[in-house]
Image 1 (cartoon, rainbow, N blue to C red):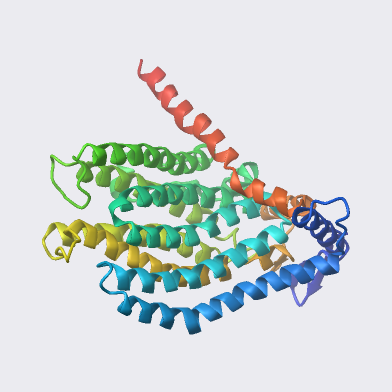
Image 2 (image 1 turned 30 degrees about the horizontal axis):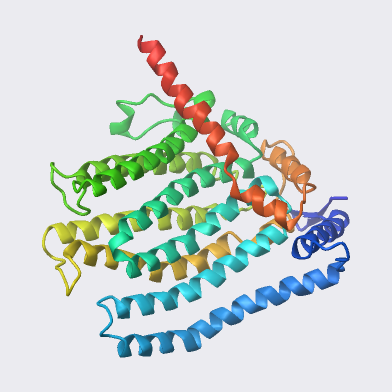
Length: 424
């Protein structure tokens, strides 16, 4: 049973009756994952103890990395200085990776073990994976800098995937597409759907029916273009005409950078539009701390992209030079990768706080107004709260982007074909 209690004007939902059953179900399913033998019948208490032990191990690993691994790797790096030019950067960046990965993986495991809102938490897990993947891939690029372009291309692909996941995350928090249309219908679309002055001259204001569709299209086009740009980058690099960081009309980097940057800026713009339209509904009746979540995702995607463009600009203007056996473009790529390894530690801490699994254990809000469309999201959450599966099913559910691939076919390619038919 889900009960509502009132405390001094605020309303909270108690999952007292449901929570115990759900926790027992989740623990039992996790036991089957950990031991598939017919004789495996661990109690919920044993499973809880196992997960607490795993969490404690990850924190101990982080603490050990901070106290022991960093000094040891630094000393070893200086002793090993004759082996390669990237030894100090590689070892010190590895220390940051050792700190970053346990923090992020711990939060992911806690989400999967407390998978009470699958339709929402699957997107959270995908977002949380971004930090350790960025960290590991950047670290590998330092070690295998000859192949850094290919490794970074995979990282960029996941970046577009995260932007799309964040859009779907916001949609699901508010109860789905139908409920968002109800929310938007209560707003002044003359203000919400209006574009800035210069942009408004070429784009008509968005109405209730088109607003969410245009937001989805704006993000999904970035996913599609990012995939295309990645393959073109690899082909041009193999053909010797790409030259990363070189802004010349006879080189591919200039065109790929322009297309990817324009596409990313548009994707970020539509996400900002969506956030500004529903920000009040993301704080009432449930405060999901939208500003922190928005800044975390945009910080990783936007900051690292412009950081890379700025470093490429410095390199193309001769400010970043070759060093040892490293060419100037290798030094620029290495600097970007090293900075990402350092920055991801702070983003891991920020993501663990803003995307905490604890938000889905108890639903709390200030002053639920039954006349508001936001109450529909409560009803959605109550239903979703019952759909608890095993740890294994939670992992697979959060891993495959079936809704994104479906919408790419329906929203991007279908919309493009309709435009062609209209022109014809």
